[in-house]
Image (tube, rainbow, N blue to C red; front, side):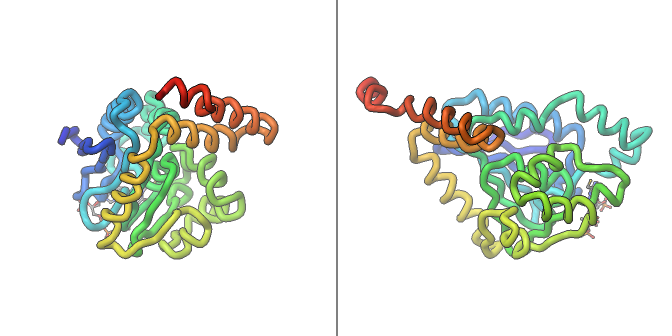
Length: 246
Ligand code: COA
């Protein structure tokens, strides 16, 4: 297991495990975590042995309670604190990783915590998970991609309700609005996500990457262009390519 200051990184049987590891601060996202996450995401992206990656939070209470408010408050202003974060485009990097990404969500999933989860492809929550975007209470708007990724996931109405009111929702509501794929009892969270990751890792990694690319890239395209993209990607696995592989 490789230890960063704020993350644990482990690789086993084609699955990368990334654990946000500041449990004493509910895994709040600080600048060190930004830097560590950038390193880990690049390592995942560039490692063909990694077929799928799983993100989770250490400790009992939280996946991630959002941006580190102590750091935010010691910066001259939240705007300056943010500007420093923008120096490194972690969220762009997150969204560009070609392998499937899974988030295992428990406890508090707030602010950048939700946004990190939204950079993943599949989200599995435990029954104790609570989701919220408290940014409006701080006089700012989300800036880790949330204003774009949330409506693409739950639709405009629910996204705006969460963004404008700052109201938290529980795991059941998160499932109802399709913020998460599945809700499981807390003690089954690890096992469920591991099984899901293992299932993905057992398939041809090129097929997994192309399926992800077709869906994710296609969602931002007009239908005709999306169908073109699908045709191009599907052709990689046509009879000719199977013969080549054999
Ligand atoms: N940044 C920095 N530290 C944080 C944090 C954050 N976002 N969220 C929690 N912590 C720290 C607390 O300060 C506390 O540390 P301390 O013991 O040194 O004081 C520790 O984590 C445990 O948190 P605590 O508040 O005691 O837990 P709780 O169960 O009573 O409350 C929350 C949990 C999530 C309701 C509460 O911590 C909270 O509101 N956090 C801020 C959430 C937020 O606004 N995030 C920013 C989004 S932009």
